[in-house]
Image 1 (spheres, rainbow, N blue to C red):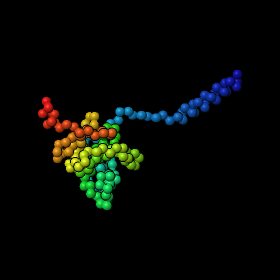
Image 2: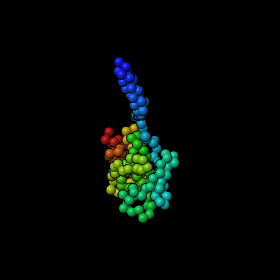
Image 3: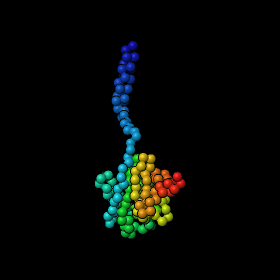
Image 4: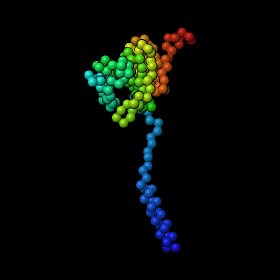
Length: 165
């Protein structure tokens, strides 16, 4: 009987030590990472853009190279980006043909998707945050696209929709 009590006591002590040593994880769900307005940044001579308001800085050279196959000098004069609800960064610039969807990782942005806008590029891009997607607007033509992390879709213009109705 005495050995049974000692065994139960020993198992209880070991279980208590093991259970108190287990780390509990905390999960916060339904996080919205979106920023309500786009950031417009100018790269320095090395290609670095900094946004102190949102606490991010990165080098535009890899994206410029993807667009122009040239990084001998910084030709991108303005970088436009917005962060969507799921945490991805959407990046483009005037005359770029693509929107680059970047995933944040420890100390870096990793390309998730390259989304083709047009073969000619857009001269005056602007991003807007919408409830279900990111909106890309060409301010010079009024063209509008719905953008998400996997795809881009051109919207029918408001004028064309009114003519149909």
